[in-house]
Image (cartoon, rainbow, N blue to C red; front, side, top):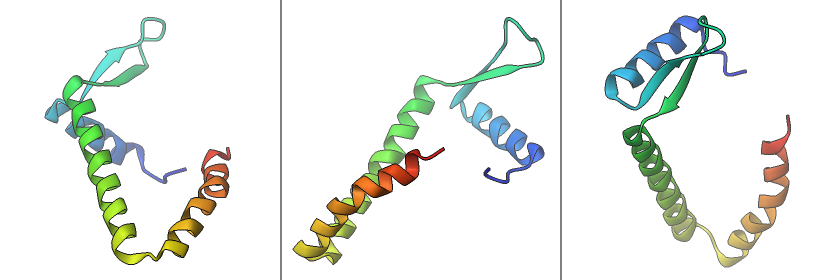
Length: 87
């Protein structure tokens, strides 16, 4: 779906591993498979990035939107959520 090659994803995963953001665990049932999990540091960084994004979006909306536009954005959340959840 994301159109990322195996080679590119391998490089991304290796870099995240080097940074200490993830750990790899070999599957107990299939040694060819590897499970990837966030480390506590990886989770901290992920939450920090999400919070920074949310803060930026809140500031942008406050600085650029009228009360009517803010209300339109609130109304748009329901159909946008349906689109995001579509499989």
